Length: 425
Image (cartoon, rainbow, N blue to C red; front, side):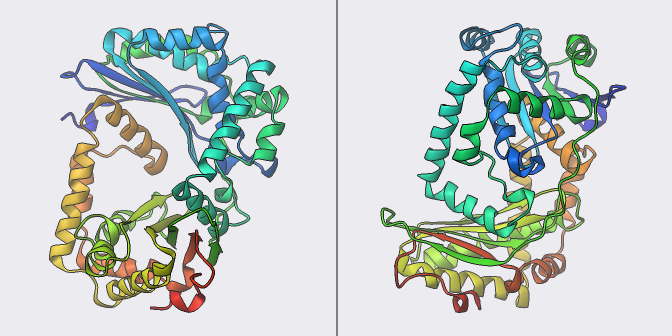
């Protein structure tokens, strides 16, 4: 597996960063065009526009002026092309056989430089996005997570729903879309990553005509500082048979020295079949079918979230037992055996995630965007191995504070709502 000391890095005079990791033994390549701006960079009147643009650039560009020609160009690649919008970034990416690299770069370059934003096509895609919002609201796991974000960072940019609201999306047209695109898709906000059977010099030759079209400008301003708002929210839905819960504590941001230890704490708490919460809630007491914990990091904050689905009548006990398990870790720490299992899970996940050209491309981007540097796989494994039981307990004591808890419950029934006293271990 190649080490990142062989990766290629170039920054253009206008500020676009390009990262390439050649992997000679594969026959595929993956390329991503990343925009350092997601939903948390939107102003209040712009909510959902980053995601709206992610959709609508596929409706036509200068070279592929309509959805039919865009779809045909995509299918002719023989591989895959996709896009997503997150809280902090938007990304357009693809994976193809190396022979198709020029066409892939051309197509991705068109998306981020020369979209047309035809009014009729925007109106059609607006309806598609409204259906996507409705679908999200009908999926309890998705909606309870939106409830959590909207309350835990209430009033701040992380509370912005990535999809936006129905009312705002329905109002977006050519003017709003072009303005947001012009203010966002510029050289300092653009990161290009590639991995696979790629010659960096050849890739740079392919990128030059695209980079010539990328305007200069100012990088995205940092959003306002995020402040957590502990809360307890019960929302009843009569049609739901289960209660979906998200319990969240604050967690370290991207570059915090405790981020790796916090990740291992997440594994111990709810990362597998031998995790504390799985054993306590499902195996010992049969309170739920699914339970897990996951960590999300952002530029200046984060969250360690516990996700559970259970019958409404079990919800209070689920919360009480989950809080008691958090208290046990704070008070007694974790065992060497637990930590070693968590480390093995983390190392395995890391290595498995880097065994394809697309995953290496994503890794380059995520490290650059989140850490401001690219670590070798050995450096990343060393970070995991160096974490101690004492460090995990200290992180738990610092971050698993009941007074900082946010809890969203979707599908609670009258008489079974979560109460404030259920949050005390």
